[in-house]
Amino acid sequence: MSDMSYVPSASEHADEFIKKTHDAELSHALTRHHLRIKRKKLALFGFFLLSIMGLIADILIGSHGLTLTQVLGAIFHPASSDIASRTIVWDIRMPMSLMAPFVGGALAIAGAQMQTTLNNPLADPYTFGVSAAAGFGASLVITNIVAIPFIPQQYQVAAMAFVMCLLTTFMIAGISSIKRISIEGVMLFGVAIMFAYNGMLTMMQYIATETQLQTLVFWQMGSLDRGSWDKIIILAILLPIVLAIMMKDAWKLSSLKVGLERAESMGINVKRLRIKTLLLVSLITSLSVAFVGAIGFVGLVAPHIARMVLGEDQRFFLPASFLLGAVLLEFASIASKSIMPGIILPLTVMMSMVGIPFFIFLIIKKGGKF
Amino acid sequence: MTLKINKLCVSFGKNLILDNMSIPDIHPGEMVSLIGKNGAGKSTVLKQITKRIRLDHKSVLLAGKPLVLDDIGYLPQDHRISANITVLELLITTMHIGSNSLFTKANSAEKALTLLKSIGIMALANKVCTELSGGESQMVGLAQAVINTPKVLVLDEPTAALDMHNQFKLLEFVKFYTKHNNACAIMVMHDLNLAIQYSHKVAALHNGKLFAYGEPRKIIDEQLIQDIFNVNSQIIQLDDYPMIAARL
Image (cartoon, rainbow over the protein chains, first blue to last red):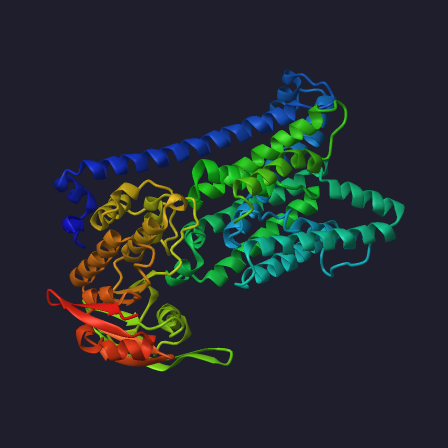
């Protein structure tokens, strides 16, 4: 153990120590680490720019052939632009396009945190049936079976979706905490939940009136055209708060991902951290699903790309997941408007086209073992 | 800074794992090995040390005060690290548990690197944890356990995944660490020869009870090995070192 002399004393600063030792190996490792951090910051900035570009492109693209000048004029000088352009941009395109980054980001951080807290790389609100639960909750309100007291009519759907989301998330968390059930087992449990809720949803469709049925089917498809300014304001206020709470726990969440036993021994109250995080996951998933319907795979794909590019230091991983979720949904929105001109395809279809191959890729890459 | 472990009781259903078990005081600088056959309750003792803190404050005391988690550096038996972060990031994360700031403390990377250097695994600093071999993970786990300079090291089979060279490297470091930081180490050991060589005291566990406790050369003999492992053995003196060989 010739290197023992390298342990710095408690009073000695490491930089003084490095100067003293003139250690080339140490400074090389340090430079590599700093470069890695710089690369992460650059990547985050890149994702941010991409999300802004995606948002602008999404606003510009639409079925009414508005020119770039007309769109920009309506945004920046609404008083001097014509009524038609103003109405299209402010009342139709912007609410739709602005929903994309918020909902995409929300679903992505929900997926990221489900993967972290349940230690399951396949977790996402959609694959684990949490979105289906929210859908079922919403269907109970749409078909007038359930009404929650003291909640205004326009928020009934969101509230019931939240309750069902919460119940399901904690059911999954409960199953995950049983040691003898493997990650694959929890996954299968999630699939069973999804089938159960979908079955119940079909039942709801069966008993629904014609108008209710239309709402239900349309709602299940997931579409940003249900976006509105009041929904955007709610998400714009809530999401930064949720993200800030999660970021406050960033070090603890990173440690939880390292290993449950180690995290516990380091003083992290794993149970409390899990419950707190899953509550936040339920909140943002239910709001997203209640506002725009079920959109699959954003919560699976975005965190995995973030993980591949930036690793799992939650200080970078969380914002990166959020931004990538935003980018994914913005591009899905653009594609949904562009593939068949004049028709907006359901977002679930668009996301499934990306998400399912990615899901299969993950399974093959890991050899079916997690 | 004496560590006291008093009256640990654990049962799973009808199975009594630890039967009101106490271990004599462990003093600063001491390395204590827990030995015993599988299922004797060794790992349970270690888990109780890290768990007891939240359950009650009387069973595990350091310098007469209840042991807090900041005092402990724990290396679990399952050495795999499942996060996609580098070794350096892992150590920096461990240094910041409990911090509400997203910014790292000054010189944290440098401090982590000096520790890696002292353990002799500097080359792993920028390697991603999921790509580490079993032995490398074990060494990194040790670095993680000591990064916050705890007063009690709790090591569950620390040499299990290691080759001969790394077994000595790890134990030499633990010896160095405990001596220079006035810390104590309590570890589960299966290799009795290593336990003799690196422990100040050995606690032999049998059926959830402390069967024998004392200096390794005094308590480990053919009779004890027969009693707790049911193995017929012979102890040979080699350059004044006792070496245990099984008689088949």
